[in-house]
Image (cartoon, rainbow, N blue to C red; front, side, top):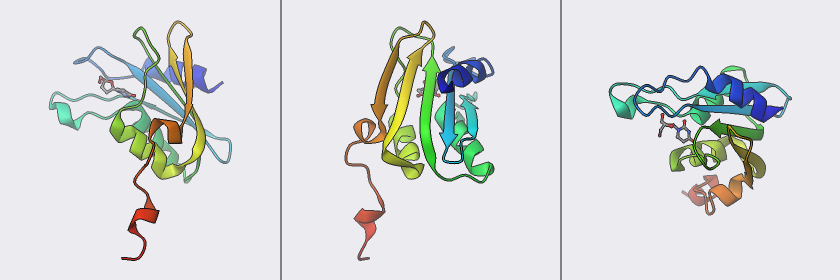
Amino acid sequence: MLVEAARKVRENAHAPYSNFKVGAAIRSADGAVHLGCNVENIASPEGTCAEAGAIAAMIAAGQTEIAEVAVIAGGPAPVTPCGGCRQKLAEFAAPDVRVTMATLSGETLVMNVAELLPGAFSAAHMSGR
Ligand code: THU
């Protein structure tokens, strides 16, 4: 299950500054699962989100189509991807792709990519250049 894969990779997160570990798992169109966790840096803008790591792993594996996403973190409510990660997901995911956001205690929130990023900037906006 994708949430369980995200839960496991979360343990590897490098989050000594925020103390907020996040895990992400992406299933690509071929069925493979790609994992990512947040990797913080003492120079804070250089840190990367779990979702970005999972996307990078998917691309490195030669897959370009996201079929499903799971994200998990500690905290009282299911973690929602940051704005930048919503745009990164939209690059490789159709609007109806399901994103399951979970807490460690098992609460989940399910939204699709279009709900997370309504009005996403897309290639259509650049047509007719
Ligand atoms: N973070 C993620 O990795 N993904 C999210 O969806 C939300 C936030 C990370 C970034 C940073 O390392 C820490 O959580 C606190 O913002």
